[in-house]
Length: 206
Image (cartoon, rainbow, N blue to C red; front, top):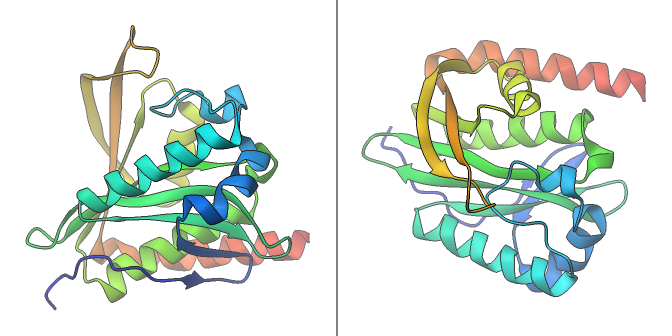
């Protein structure tokens, strides 16, 4: 199978729906979910948006950046409430090398450690491996962001190593080391089974 570039699509799950990020549609919900929350934005490469207008502008830049890297930005819609509660992206896409990165992900704090992240990643990874034909998915995060590292590890991703002084943080002063993780296509079936089991546990807890 020849790998394909991501194209606009809606990925529909039980608890969440991933749809192409549209600043004009999603900004109000997104700002309500996490705009201005210092802890939500602590490790992201942008200052917390202090108004809906700032968040709308940032969402536009994120969508454009993902697209310029061959990818796609998604709004994460929590289906029971029908509201966007975060966003995530495919980026750094290479169909020749059959790889892409999942990143620039955030959710409102109320949705941390819920089914939202588990199902979002299940939808993204299923589409990338099974529909787009990717052989490798990558994640990277700040070496100080232990919560993100734990969440990525729980997906079944392999910690590959650290790029030292990789990029300047959003404060414009301090430098970030980045921890890299990956999953390969032949590791996906086992990881998929574990993620489905975790979703079942979430459902059982209500």
